Length: 354
Image (spheres, rainbow, N blue to C red):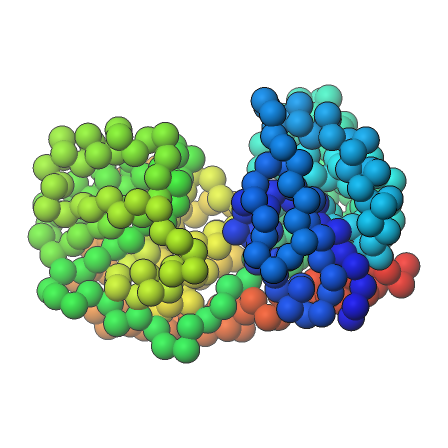
């Protein structure tokens, strides 16, 4: 393919970056139009300066984006995230228009009648919609039942390293958390569970990667729980180094209270780690309970601690689940296959076969 694709999305998002670069490698001419952010390496990027609130910025640049798309004369426009960038796509009046739903845009945004009305208008402007999980597809159908035949589940796939990680190099069993330090992702619940688990098995050790509004509070919580010898804060991890980082750990923990998909769990599984996760949203599509990991009720620190102890004390089960996780990712979430799927959607949309 040599068609020109305009991507409307935040150029600072690792997912937008991966889609833009992956599609470019497939031979498409890709142009990213972003509100704030930075240039995507190897991809033509138009960054519109963000001044003030993002919601105002989306409205302010509506005429500008419409003019840019008219000037660029693409073969297809793809909006990533229904609200904001989806609004840009709808306002442009351009077709074919593909729109990708990510999660909070259809789970959290439509909380009143006005927002539901606006979101429905945006979604119905698309010639085709993609959702990262079956969970999200069901959410779209509840909003726009007439769009059901125009929705395809296209996950945020992951690459699979040739070799799985080696795990801990000492007698400790290392857990890893790789999410923002925000209430939604349950890091405080995880520390509470660690307080219980460490009291039962001193080999357990947790590395908290990432940062967020709760970081200072979490460090204080860890200290108050007497976890100084069991918890380490690793800070931000560059996604390009994610598999090297994951490979030095034994178990991935994702205690989210809400989750539309769970890319972090996929990356961990691809690296050969079993995953303990909150049983919410689309997580059960990614983590197969009892096979590739363990699902626990969200917010249940005692249940989370029980799952941690179970895997810490059973190396054979960790290995078995880790291998099953790699096979699951290879079968359903391989990045190259997800790219193929998106290109096929583009081809159908450009042929007028939504």
